[in-house]
Picture (cartoon, rainbow, N blue to C red):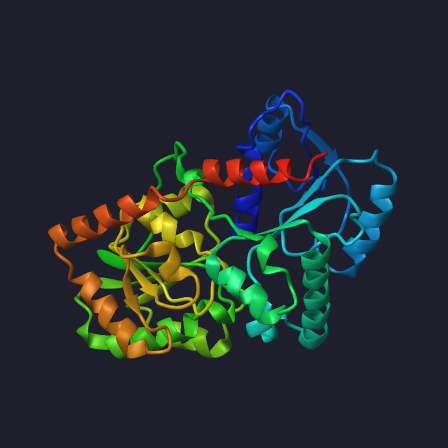
Length: 356
């Protein structure tokens, strides 16, 4: 599950209940897990299903048509970057990141056109919405950098949470050829800096302790041919898992010696909180929102310097139990500053300012 899905599912599940307020949520048929739909129904949330495209101009057209068939709502929450411009009621708009401005090539075919459209859509949301929520101070700064005419006073910072990890997972055995490993969780998009991580592994080379390695978990569809060749050439030290379900992900986190997150740019960075939850030393890029989220509970490196990253990987794989425990305690203390319950409560209070 990606970060945006985690955000929406966890926030909606924790919205405070009111005697004088009715929340509705619009979902695409067959897309939302049934367990969440059942939970929302028990919390009094009305579920509306609509076959609307997830992104792009087609979504705008379909949403506009659907909205004409609905009663007049008092306010709206747009929880993802694409703003529904058909909304004419007071709206709270959540911006998670605008990474496409820095790395447009990740948009794939017709990237320049897609970037132009996304820029215009976000600009419309910043203009139309009465309240804008940024998921970090870094994201707020990025909004104002790429949209300098936006009203800074209506942009509020509300952090994300981590309680989605509190589940009763079935025990699963991880399938790795290493006695100890550093875990990377994330997609293979360019800004995630898998290229830099692989370069760091090449530099670490034979200095790595015997029987140790790197596990790359997550969507691997954008791994380049060059990167695949590098992974194959170092299969004694590097393995990929592809997509993992939540049970498998839990097992890989628990068995890891440390976690590495080398991203060049993040709007927030939920894997930071996940590493803290699992009490793992976190090797972290010192870029974008990541130091804001992790504070003093991470071991930092410059993501543009693979030599630094290699040194941190070697240090992590040779950590004593006492050193691991010290970093785990720091992470656990930092985790207390975040929660989905707080996120939902703050959004609910902001919605209150939109109501008549």
